Image 1 (cartoon, rainbow, N blue to C red):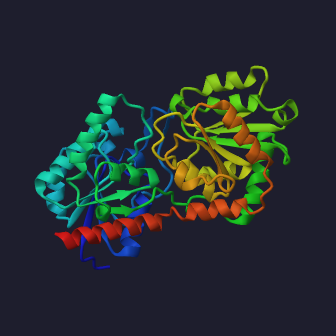
Image 2: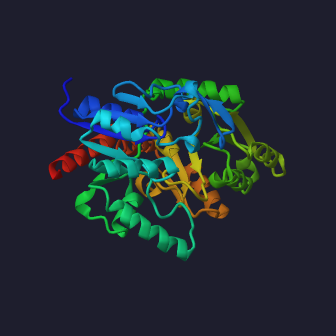
Image 3: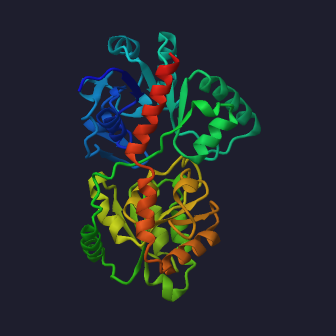
Length: 397
């Protein structure tokens, strides 16, 4: 394919939720994409501090678009996002000569240094990042300082892409004109999952059998890092509030790993005990059996949850989701009495009632509603938003 215009994307490393969007952007929307990555650690293998696990993503993150690396792990390059630097980026940009550049954040420092190099080189700029006001509690002074810096930062971009409702509100609050905003939703590529109807039945039965869970028992699933900001202990605390007959017919499955694993296991065994299963970190292609085995998904985060892409994953599998109001995607993906429930962060009583409502619901259309909602936040729609923003920027230059 002969591409007329080229977009450079700058990231610390290939990300399993971003790379499929760039592939669709090039293959379906005709935008030549060159991703300039600071390091290849996510495909070479690395240790995630929060997961407490060493792994490499088991899905294709490099095909369908042009990928270039400033450093590689095999040659002594950065082994995590915090170590990545923007050294050599300006020379790569001069070689690529893109028509515009997409930046995806301002933390860690790599992104700020990348922005300065792109700005000095004079390339038109687009921004798509995890932008919200809800995820972190700040002092009034810090809020004022942050707002001032971000107003100046955002003014340096020709187009900004919002990933959801809270992201859009954030940009508008900080004075970004509506005309420069484009919707490019946060999304997951469902290709690695087993989503057909037959897989749901067979995977559900086999996974429950392997875990010792009876077909009629209720299963709540948590997937993610077992860290304090995710508040996984709240799921156990809520189930401990169930009536005895209900609690003894309930299981909680934790997919993931992290610093709280031992404490969670011990807490589950304390009276009144909860039947909890810890299956450890699971890569993308290994997740579907656990989603199919569950009756509902729970993400009770207390802080730092700018979006929550595991909610997208759960909805793709037809699972209703119970999330705290600190989860960034809540207003986009979780529709009460339809695709799930939203509760106030840290409120165990509200979480308990939400779990009970979802567990006792008898809506035969829920699975289809959840999958339809997930489809609204697709890689194609994300790529379409970037393509529209790119065209807008080219018209202005």
